[in-house]
Image (cartoon, rainbow, N blue to C red):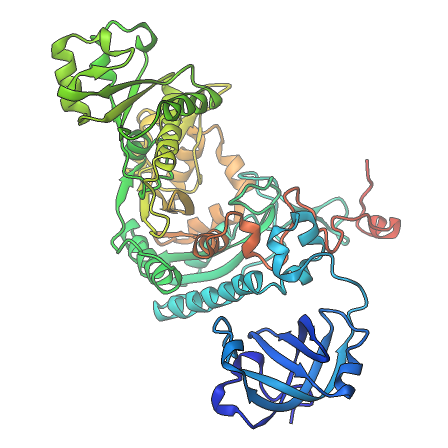
Length: 580
């Protein structure tokens, strides 16, 4: 028999009344009611009430504080009806303890109330993360993470994927974010790097003859934190498929992600197949390549309409329009929208409102003749009480600004159903974009993506070339990027030449992959949904650090372990490193 407990705190039920039980856990609360002490004891599974009537048991706890670990033994009793607690699993019973033993005394007062840890400053929570994790609300998110990972593994194996672990010590990559470097003791002056992703290794697995690979892969990037991005390290569901097309990857992703969200999400999930939206359409209709489809507002291109309108601020610039129902909004609503627009760098926010009789009101209306007004009403879907907002700026900025206005309108008008999960694929990303400084073509995303049209496509205008490259987006959050890979050496050489790399660069920087493709490589494709971002959505967390057991702070520090930290001179010498 276990010397500490016979049951956990959540297992105590009314049908066990009269049984002798032993419980163990942390003292959550202590209530002294005139000689009778009530304890709430908390363990991993739940909370149970322990009653101390006897002098011997009360004496044990006389000088002890909350968070002391105890084991208590006694008879299980039914609570009085007025003291039943329906919020906990053991709320109908209590343990009348005849003996209590201290297993781990809490010598220090806790720096914050455990149940209030979410309201504590983040740096304090992270410094005492082991205490923060005792909060059932925080604890449950880590449990959710474990269940999600278990689901993913079972699902991947049911779909025929093979789990393979790829190296943690590898070569530095010239593409992407900054690497975390690891100095070599045996090879003076040389460094390993922690992998930013298993990209090259998973492609090499396809060349090696494996058909379907997956991994819950740790990735390391020396990047600054954002609300949806952890600094330092993160995990992704990395998978790759041989002899696969883009559609094959989409089918697998839908099977995995729809089932995952349907199982663990608390609200409605958009069914598969998920909408396919081209990058071009997404930028035009939503002003972003990460659209939140819960927001019903759409952006319209009004550039052609305004070519024949004498309104100086729109002359020679693209114009976007967003129609929203604002009939019940006060004047302050429009003033706040203008303030928001100015805050994101716009020079103003023009709008027209349809009044009774579809009379258009607003500063821009006077520049429209009657025929133009009728045309605009039909074009924008204006109805009585609706307002058409205008965004006009340089071509490189207008879509992004319109997207921010769309999002702000959706939030301020309460149009977004927070209980829904809307997933979609964004497809047909441009292969190249113009470098802001030089104007020369550079890769927009993964340089190993297959151009649509293969070698023939690479003979045309680089900025017109599309790639078999795609993202999965959920509620405005990018969950994953992926691509059909470029597995043909001659096409790869040409693709890299356009971006300013020659064959020698390929051989030096991506030697293993480039060489492997000369030994017969199958067509292959894959993607890598971010585990942490998925969990952030499922848990309803506003910050990705809430879904990680031991996260780094926003500036990349481990405040609990005091990392990064200095090392000894001997350690530096052994690694052939000198601080400068």
